[in-house]
Each structure stands twice: as structure tokens, then as C-alpha cells.
Image (cartoon, helix red, strand yellow):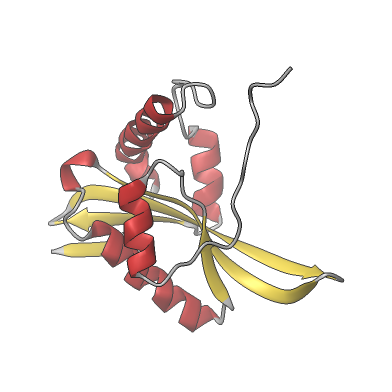
Length: 155
């Protein structure tokens, strides 16, 4: 059974293992952008996130299976409609638990937070090479908002 809960200090090591797995995928996809590092998530920053109550754990029968980091973004300026956005900064699932409903459980949880706290929308960013994640997000109704483009080889 999958449950979602707020992370606690004792979750750090398992979270870092999952973050390392994701970093390895990013390095494999884009070694020109990402590099191997340790830690991916420093303990200091992790404790800051805990104070913000923005780190969540997915557990499968008591075993850590995924981590999600959320961020509140308030948009207010003369060129945009004022909005409060629930931004999914990180959604990472342990490789042993992928394709077992962890991402879906996270999204149901995020939708509940959105409704309970009155956010206007949920947003996230996804690596262009993470096709499985894009399919899952599209299945939840996410649509592209903007596309980052780059030019790396030029004279």
C-alpha cells in the first residue's frame, strides 16, 4: 500500500539515494549539462526544506519509494495574471518502484494540497528526454507551457 507523508530528518539517507539515481539519469541524458556529484541534496538544504514543510515521502508498505519537493510561487507583475502556483520542484521514484503507481499517488496528493490551500495551478518542469514522465504528466492533463531551447555549438 502506497502512503504519502511529510519527510522527517531520519529520511535524509533514503532521499539522497533516490536523488543520486535521478542525477545519474540526468548525467546519462545530458553529460554536457549535468555532472556526478555527492551529495545531490545537501543535509543543510534538506533541513531547510523540512522547515518549509515542502518535502514529502512516498512509502510502499513502510519502505521509502519516492520523494517529492514542492514550492510555492507567487506571480504578480504588470504583464501576468496574479497567480499562486504549486510548483513540483522534484518528483523522484526509486528505480525499484517505478511504474508501480508512486507518481500517481504523488499527483493525487498534490491535487489535494492545491484544493485545500487554494492554489491557482500546479506546474512542473521535465527533462525533454524523460519520455516516461512526460507521458505520465500528459495523462494527468498537463500541457506544455513553455519550451526551453539552447544553442551550444556555434561560431
